[in-house]
Image (cartoon, rainbow, N blue to C red; front, top):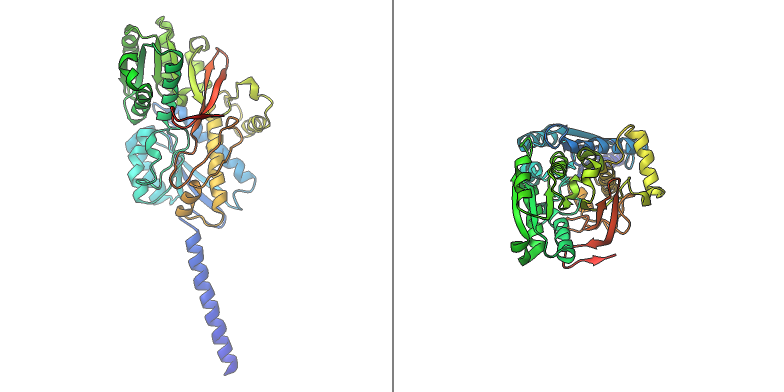
Length: 411
């Protein structure tokens, strides 16, 4: 009887251990996670009008391959499923549903574009699936109160636009400004930030505004109107394909205004090279990451490491295309979040860790720029610096600017 009683107690204890063990395992692993794998979704425009950004998805895939080659994250390999949406919001919805409901990914990472991410914004939050480090600077991605499952990564468009406005108010207060913007949330976010930055002066400084649709074949007619406005300053709020067209059109028409180009279209390889280096001379933009073409970073150890990574994992790719450094930086940040999550790889803990980055630096951010988030701050990068193209390379000038213009500090 004593032996039987001991056996029963042992069996009960084993059953309890198995029960709590399975409950613990279920609690620490979300969909797409096993002892050996973390399944992550991505959505990029590998085709369509914004296909120049497809390089980002390709480079992220290459970065995760490097991570896997080095043993993965805490012993788990990343299975990155990156789908094409052609920069079409209905297609984005279709691909997001596939990733979440059929592929059962843990999260969707770096889905690109403001209109496309807007199309899945409510869906991702209703499903409580992390929509992490979206590839767009729209201000709506930093709203943890209403959308706790969505977070941006790059500086917000309004903050960037206010830097240009601040520069104009300081350096050229009597400027006559013409603006071309994409007619969607992305373009309007930049436009509204710029107008807010100019304040009351916007009424007298802005002399012309023209919009375009992403489906337009060219923006030649808009550029003719903007040139004819008599403006001596131009804010170019366009995606890469149109940015290259616009820079060349302005030059060919004999219009040579002081030109500001939004950061998302500042890549030398995909924008300035097709536009023409001579045609692009003098253009001003902002930056928050190192530039391969900038001689001051030639011997930087981090840049050398990035260069070696490109040679191994992206052989033959154009190193002057800033999208590759962007992809490296944002993928590096994603890996940090997963490392911080440890073995608690639930969707809730991934978001918790994403909102708990403290003075974190990836290898090729500009010196002085750090990533910080909190449960109330879903804007990881809020620092930028101005730079100007001299016909061969970008050159930094001024200070690193932090926060909203008018409330900034410099380092």
